[in-house]
Length: 118
Image (tube, rainbow, N blue to C red; front, side, top):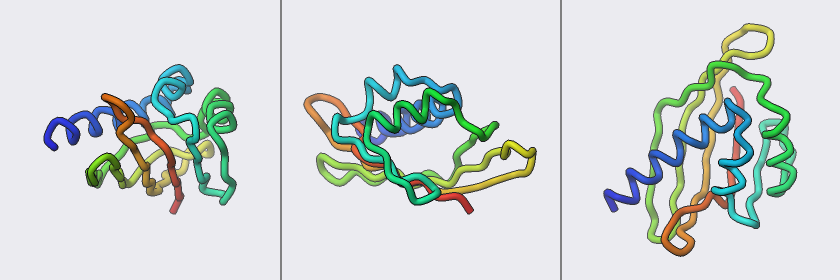
C-alpha cells in the first residue's frame, strides 16, 4: 500500500507537470488505451483527442496542486486534488480534478480524468 501511494503521488505530480509542459510522450506512456477525459466545458475526449489537446498546450500558467487525496482501492485508485493557476488574461483561477488509475501488470495507468474549474 505504501509503495502504491508513493507511486501514485509521483504519477500525479508528473501528470500535472506534463499538462503544463505539453508532454505528450509522458501521457502516451501513462494513459490506458481506453482513457476518457471530461473537460471543464462538459466535452468528453477519448485518448487520441486528449493527446491532441495536450499537444496544443495549456491556456493556463503556473498550474499547481493542493489538497491532494489519493485513495487506493485494490487494483484501482482515485486521485482528487484542487488546482490553482493563472488564466490567459492574468487572473487567478482554481479547479478540482479526479483521476482514475488502474493497476495493469506491474504498473499503474490512468483510465479516466474529470476536470472542473471554479
